[in-house]
Amino acid sequence: MSIHRPALLTDHYELTMVSAALKDGTADRRCVFEVFSRRLPSGRRYGVVAGTARLIELIRDFRFEPSEVEFLLRTGVVDETAAAWLTDYRFTGDIDGYAEGELFFPGSPILTVSGGFAECVVLETLVLSVLNHDSAVAAAAARMVTAARGRALIEMGSRRAHEEAAVAAARAAYLAGFRFTSNLAAGALYGIPTAGTAAHAFTLLHDDERAAFASQVATLGKDTTLLVDTYDISQGIRNAIAVAGPELRAVRIDSGDLAVIAQQSRELLDSLGATETKIIVSGDLDEYAIAALAAEPVDMYGAGTAVVTGSGAPTAGLVYKLVEVEGRPVVKRSEHKATIGGRKVAVRRHKPTGTATEEIIVPQGVPDRQPNDRLLQRSFVVAGEPVPLPTLDESREHLRECLISIPWEGLKLSTGDPAVPVTVVPAG
Image (cartoon, rainbow, N blue to C red):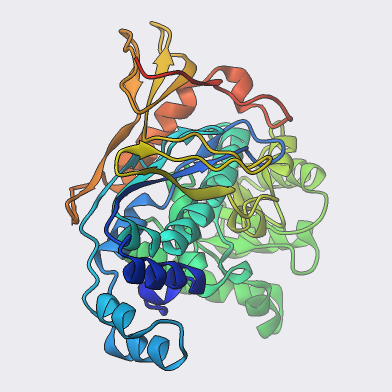
């Protein structure tokens, strides 16, 4: 489901390099590009790899249509030679990387793209746009899941995002452990369970609150959620139970001091005999607000703006850098932006109990493996052909297991060091 053709995500400067490389004969030099983050967003102790399956699908379909090539040629972005090359473009290289749902830390080589220079460099913007967005959302969502302490979360941020980003964000949030999304496109595309309730507009449409609730219950039954804070919350709850009875599935509260209101609402519901009616809260919730409600009688959280915008970190800060040409390591030496040359292999080291202790990265070599090490990279594309990937639910479970494996300090919401230290060692 895409409005924009993947090929038109190519940046102007990428095609400048392609044109020049084709002209000087370097376009087919065998190269290795790596995706990594120099640092985590402020306050974060881990990153989450997300969007990989979406990216591989987009690369599989990455083609320049005749109209697109004509546009690039007419506007002087490319010359005739480059235009012919784009017309025949197919990615024929290899892509390896960390599994979707894997944790990453500063320097982790989360994606490795190998092939001719031109065929790899033309993918840079596509790769980074997908991984930076989805990984940012997944990291924020994972922190919210931790803060929720086992209570369910529903992603409801579509109205705060670009229409296509909203679908990708719903997918990334589900990967991170959210239980539902309100985005029906994400439900249709990815099989994510959907949930939602009426908005304040539906209550305002009717002559009074009871009439609105009666209409919703008559249509959907008692297994629905009634929004009770359009007017007065306490009276809204009374009206909801009067209409639906104590078997009403849930009420939602979207405003006010949620900690106080949740307590009062639980007491009121119980006094009305609705002891099994759940309380769902929403309204600009982020991981900190969710954590602050941990002791309150809340059964589910609805998160919108914060999750789809990465909760203050809307990008994962990933970069796509050339690290090897024809088997020779190359490095960038710019201040604060230096790179480590050579294709890298990474393992995560664990205690016998399963707790992760260190990430070992070896440039141009193979790590000296220990019994509880886990190799982090796997193949995604071989000679241009995608390999079967885990399902979204399998990736979701992988992330859950990864979060269990890091030291408990790494799950704190406070600022601190990365949950797992990274060591770059010389090839053995």
